[in-house]
Image 1 (spheres, one colour):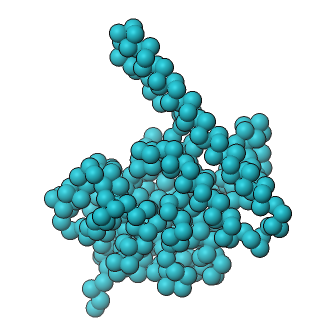
Image 2 (tube, one colour; image 1 turned 30 degrees about the vertical axis):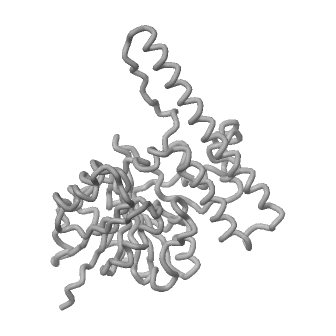
Image 3 (tube, rainbow, N blue to C red; image 1 turned 120 degrees about the vertical axis):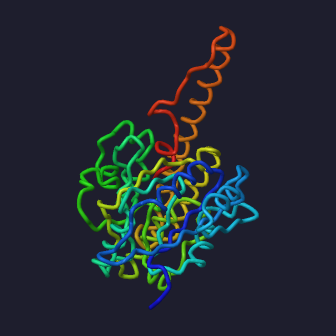
Length: 329
């Protein structure tokens, strides 16, 4: 009988010690005790990207059963994931963000879905915001229309445009197993066979869009990508990237451009690529503008509060810049 785990869980962490602690607590107490009548064995691998907040020490002290890999420098999200994947031993690899909370039986649901659909190479979980609302974690592959209208002034002028609706799958019910173009890498189950056939995550993407690219390559190789509604995971979104919002914005849009250059050369005529680049630049400009406006408001509010001798109470509302509004493609 093989002593290899059925499932390997790879988590890349950078300066999110408390979020990672909560994630590991949810994982090691999920109640995933069986797959059918048998036991669901899994291993957890944490790859720490040179955190300075005591993350590595916390994992060593509180979770000795977790395999910890500590990088001497921040190698980027994609490369760190590949380090963890190479150390994994399971038939399935779950790429999981540290700012997640795994609900009971979510792991088993993902594996059971994979076992029931052997033609599926990648399976995404049902992601919820902390308030219980749905995150649009299953989407269509981006196109020129999405690039021009998603989070740009054109999108604000035409908020109900068909390009963004198609990209976000706004009519998607999130209550049934269904084939989709791509799923969020925040909680993505990958069959080991996928990595063996098409390779690991593309390290040209330092961070962001590596999940879109992996799903694209999986489809090209004949694998399906599925959404699994019974695997419920809470995702707080952007707890690492929000620490360096402007560099993260720039890196995210660079990754979008790399994805288009890499995968869409045969999909669109070369003459249209300047239009794609324009759409990405418009989106980046809009995100940077929202960040600047927000920081200016915070600065003015703090100065006004100091003059009036009151403590600042300005809070970030839903329309203020955060990764949820400015980074997700």
